[in-house]
Structure formats: structure tokens, C-alpha cells
Amino acid sequence: MSTPSQCLQRDTQRLCQALQLDVAESRLEVRVLLGHALGVGRAWLIAHEHDEIPDIALAAYGKMLDRRMAGEPVAYILGEKEFFGRRFIVTPDVLIPRPETELLVELALGKLASMRTARILDLGTGSGCIAITLALARPDCEIIATDQSAAALAIARENATQLGAKVIFHQGNWYHALPQDAGKFDLILSNPPYIARDDAHLDALTHEPHTALAAGADGLDDIRKIVQGAKTHLNPGGWLLSEHGWDQAEACRELLEQAGFTKVQTETDLAGHGRISFGCQSG
Image 1 (tube, helix red, strand yellow):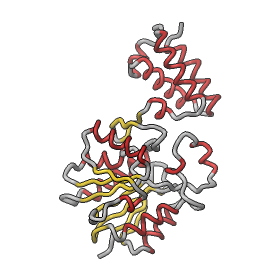
Image 2 (cartoon, one colour):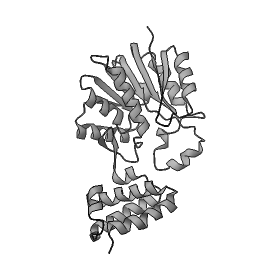
Image 3 (cartoon, helix red, strand yellow):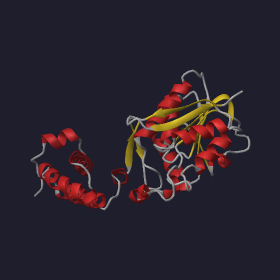
Image 4 (spheres, one colour):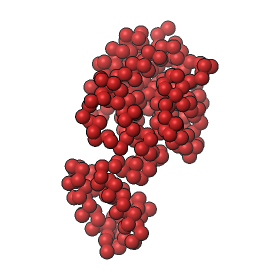
């Protein structure tokens, strides 16, 4: 016999020891996994903390806990992740949406606020969370999203269908994915790979696709391509916004300025780190 209270006490400590998580984070993850196995929310678990867990649910929970103990991210175990208040399907074929990427979307919506309508390009869409969120917030805009991975695009299309978002998807490497008659855009944004290939942090991300994480010796290879290509794909007065690493803001601003962008700035995340750099197409 096991109860939610017993699982919480026992498995919080197990996760702490296995993954070096703090107690609060471990406790939250146990609740999430247990709630998923039982098909209930946090309030139910608290109200029924001394109820016996049915064998089927307990077995499902045990399998999920084993996967988490082995280091697999919770989002992949559940098959979903919340982004901007919506649930997105995620698999190991796509990156798990992160809070700093919500900042990218917020900045994009700010730029779009003064536009009656716009054409938007999301490069390296992954799960589609950026393009879909923008499409749902601004259904008056035309939104195109690209990704090199066919598997990632399949997930993005499924997310768009389930959430009722109108997005046009193309497969290919950055701008090469676009058809010849794609025309120009008023806003281009991307959360590209930006980790240096020898960065020690990659070792902790073994479950996520490294092609969506690493980008050359300094992590800026793909951002360079995006910045250079944007010049021929943006309308005058259009904006380019790119997420990047916490220590890459200055380098990204230099790339934008060297390419002739104006109004170049960096937005910081809640920790005070520069996370999103952007500039305006001159002319």
C-alpha cells in the first residue's frame, strides 16, 4: 500500500539524491508525476493524501519516476509542456519550451502592437510554440515557420492543429526552407542553437536534440546566418529578434550593428541576464 503522502516523503528524497535537485523542486516533480498517473491535480493530492493509490496508477507512477531518476526531463515523460498558458506536445525531437522564450514572444507582440497586420517568420520553430502563440494572439497576421527537422515539424503541425492556430510550415535550413516567392517579412524571430559545441552544459542536456542546441565553437554560427539572411528577407522598418545565451548579448548586438540594423537593444530576463537581442531594418 502507498498513499500520496508516503510517495511524496519517500520519493522527494530519492530525486534529491539522484539528480541533486533542491527539496522544493523534487517535491513539485513528484506531485506532477503522481498527479499525471492518477489523472488528478495538486488539490486532489492534498485532499486525498492518505488514500491508497490504485495498483495500476502506482505502477504507471513508478515507471515515470524511474525515467526521471535516470535524468529524463519531466516534459518528455509527460509528453507536454506549458508555454504561455497553453499545453504543447513535446517529444525528444524538439526542445522543451523554456521561460526565457516567453520573453521573446512578449517582445514580438510588443513590436506587432503598432502594426495593423504583419508577415512573420519563425526560424527553427521546433515544437511550434513561438509561431503558434503569435498566431493565436494575432490571427490577422500571416505566420510562416521553418525547421530543418521533419520530425520537429510533425510535432509543430500537430500542436497547431490541436490549438487551432493557422501557421504555414516549411522544412529546410533557415531561410533556405522558404519558397522563392515567399516575399519579405515585417518581423523575423528565432530561438536558434546558441551553445558552444564544447560547452560543459551540453552534458546535462543529453535527452534534448543537440542539433537544436549547439552552434559552432562560440555558439554563434547560426545566429550569424540568421542576422545576415535577415537583411534580404525583412521589409524596411521590419524587426529581427533572436534569443541567445546569457553571456552573448554584446556579441549579438555587434552582429546586428555590423549588418546595418538600427535601434539595436538587448532585453534581460528575470535573472538580469541579456537574453533577447533585436534590431530594426534600416531604410
